[in-house]
Image (cartoon, rainbow, N blue to C red; front, top):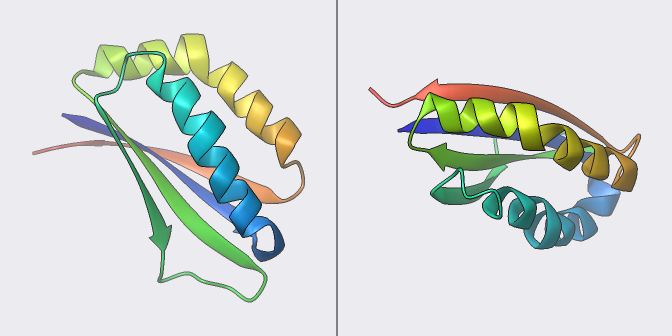
Length: 100
C-alpha cells in the first residue's frame, strides 16, 4: 500500500472555507479518478503558527502505477483548480510513502 500525502499550510482566516471546499471539491475529484482506495484528512497539531494552520490530505493507493497515473493525468488539473481558488493563501508539498 502506498500513501500519497499532500500537506497544505493555509491562512487561518480561510480555514473553515478551505476545509469545506477541500472535502467537497478536491477530495471528490481525486476519488472520482478511481485510483485511490481510501482518504483521510488530518489537522497538523505540531506546527501551528500564528497566521497559518496545516492539514495533511492522505490518499492510499494499491500500487505505484496508480499514483504515477494520478500525478501525470489528473493532478495538474486538480492542483490548478485549488491554486485558482486559494491563490496567495496557501502553500503545499507532496510526499509519497510506502508501507513496510
